[in-house]
Length: 222
Image (cartoon, rainbow, N blue to C red; front, side, top):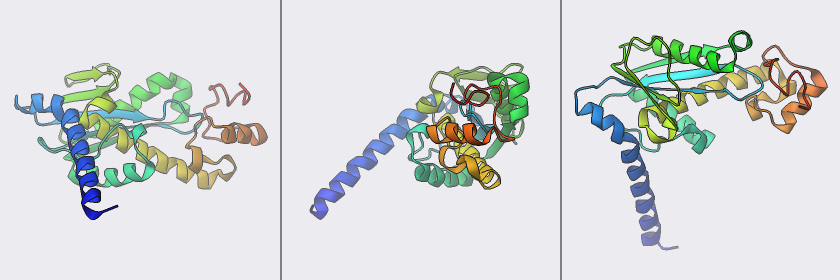
């Protein structure tokens, strides 16, 4: 392949990345133009796994700033997420992380535990947001205006960035749990119900961080 061909391919890839970034930023730009600069993106990671906490992230980026390559965390590789997480943290005005543990998941149910983690993340933002953009759900009793967007992590830049922060933070926690409970393979599957994970639960029983009310934990073959 010639150098000119490689350069053309690289230029087209970058143009595609930039077009994607502009699409993600379009909704936020409408608020920036009205003087709203402190827009918080909010998302969570870990509703579906059989083990580990729910982690939520909230962040405020400076008005006019976009993170090239940011997208729904599920669309990115682990290496891409970790690279982007560094840049997001460097450029953010404020970041809040909220966690709801397995005891709270059991007490409140997974949906309410997710809301609890999200509210904790927002409460850690300093300065406070003027508007909250959140993926898919509405939080009760917020003191700030909010908008819920279906697939917000794939359509809104600040929510995509929040999804990256939440996913990277939770994955790191699960690697720490893997060192405490090495029989379950948490570093590999991050608590999701893979065949490897289900077989480990069947062989060793649930660990202290398993969600015992979930199908596949109380009944590994379910």
